[in-house]
Amino acid sequence: MAKKSASTAKSKAASAKPAASAKPAAAPTAKGEAALIREVLEAGNGVLRLAPTWVPRSFLMPGRRLKLAPQDLYALGAHRGGIDERWFASTTPAANEGAPPDEGLSYVVYRGQRVFTLRDAVGHEGPRLVGPAIWERYQRWPVYSKFFDNLGPIPHHMHQNNAQAALVGQQGKPESYYFPPQLNAIGNNFPYTFFGLEPGTTKADIRRCLERWNEGDNGILNYSKAYRLEPGTGWLVPPCILHAPGSLVTYEPQWGSDVFAMYQSMVEGRYVPWDLLVKDVPKSRHRDLDYLVDQLDWEANVDPHFKEHHFLEPIVAAQGDGWVDRWIVYGKVDGEELFTAKELTVQPGVKVTIKDNGAYGLIAVQGSGWLDKHRLQTPAMIRFGELTDDELFVGYEAARRGVVFDNTGTEPLVTLRYFGPNTNPQAPNIGDARRR
Image 1: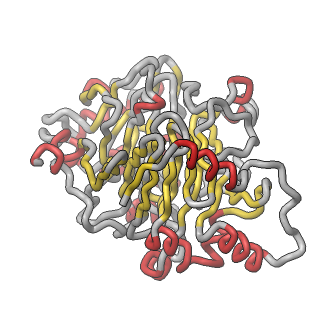
Image 2: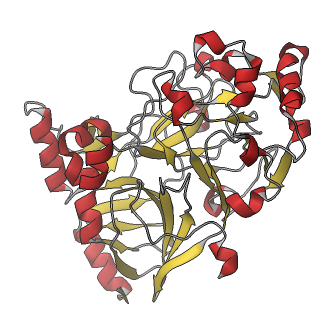
Image 3: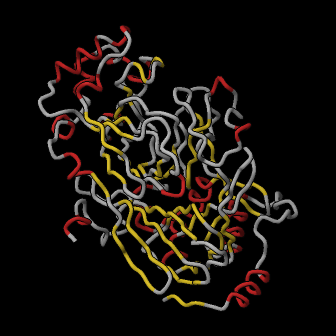
């Protein structure tokens, strides 16, 4: 239930709480990692603060809307590419050439320092952090989310399914999109996404596109359709479906894998190397054009009702006096719920206790306040390497017990949180928004 409190009482309560971003003494180093992880969990009542996780992409141009300071866009070196992604509650390493082994992994912050990765924490406290069911089946946190932010579109590409990815020792990658209004005041160069292939397209058409790879633009977008992107909506994208995401900032809950295959040879005049088409393909198949075409789920790509089967509109999950919780990602992939996400908006001066079925990663996109004893503050600008107060991982036990969101600011407190597989069987299905 939610209740409003006097602003003076709020101010006193806020000043009595510890400042999570204050400069503290160094974190303990003499303890074993397992003991330290338990200490941090106990200190946070089952909630972990996470440091920003920045990821570059060498083949894309940053859109400059992730609040990373402009002078830090190439903090990892121009040869690595600009930083256009921030990953949330990630135990999945980024599959970038030349990347260090921990690129893409989220680090837990304790007493003002990065102390261990979320992956290590889950390894030691799996049932408590991700829940018994997820731990028993996956032995890890098998999902992650990110913001990606580009000046222009991403090349038309797909993500392999489990069977295809297993051939190179990886897992498949279904994903979803939500376009947060708070980060999309401008749409940049191309706020449209191409999805799938036009009905009537043949495999021979796409094979010819691959044959023309080194002749400039291979023309694959001639066989696809672009949809205008609308802030506050999203899409569900199973594996093996071609898509060329547009230039809105995108919140992307997805499976914990970084496999992909680029099918477009040139985007905005920039060459896309063949290596990015075959990076997750067995070496013996790198020049097998029929194999590359057959990776596509043909029926799903040429679906004449593609939008009807993949478009996501927000659906109210719960609401009360001064707060509303909306489903923003839902639906099943091959009949299974693999990830879901919600957007919680709490008005100034309002507290609400939110109980969920399982663990989640959380990012604040507007406002300030508290989640239990943890400060929430949406930053205006972030220097590379700086710690922030906008990202948390709420463990299974804490989520089920319920945590208190307390908006002590002067504007709405808006947070996005994503969940792991089979956590929300009550979530809507694709198309429910229109049916309701």
